[in-house]
Picture 1: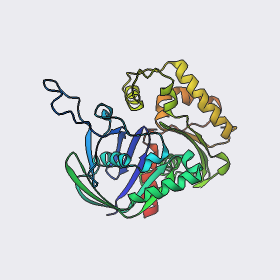
Picture 2: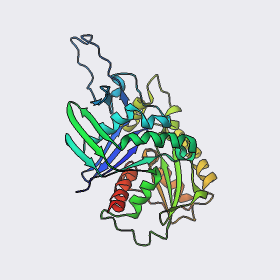
Picture 3: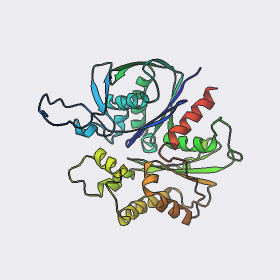
Picture 4: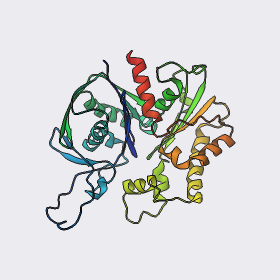
Length: 319
């Protein structure tokens, strides 16, 4: 049986999907700081998953990693091919695959549009992604894995949301979907990606993007010395509540970028908001798009729409 794996290495969430389902792991990672007996008589904060690479490097990955060492994840695109990014990938994958040996027939990876627009940097990152097409030996919390990836495909992240909209669970096309002109507005942690596809063909005129992701909102809040990953976690848990004014200011910057790339939303048959930023803005974003004449299609889960679509796309092309 063929095993298809989809991987969306977001700067806020690391998402993976297989036939077993989807797992979302916060993209927080650190080298664990050992303290000996310095906590004697006290409890230690819960340790996240511990991932050990074949090189011997160990990382803690997921929510709470910032309490165990200096956060290593960065918002630089080159981080997508770093050892810590591999550790996040392995940690997320361990929730869907049991320990042991596995053969991945096709791995589909999503990449940010602003990265792909910079051809020089994109070529460097793409070359680094070659490390995924290999044998992966690692352990998660002491459980050993061996993973052989036979084939690799990289796609722009918004293509995932389009594929999720276009294909049903069995891989059949949406009725009338091929002729539809579909705009994807993907708001992640780091970037805002704008993409338009019709019949699996991209329209270069409508490709855009900028660094207006959730980070823009978090940077405008009072960090109080907290790391970005910790602020993100507090936002998810409802412990950090941006005001309507702060959300509106962020949304205004997003809509300004949208208007520069898409002068009219009325022309599109569907406008798909996706990414964690769509969840944070919620009805504020939906209403703003609808007010501009957009035929808004809200995914079942904006956070996982891309990776679910990559999995559907991978199954379709691998048949």
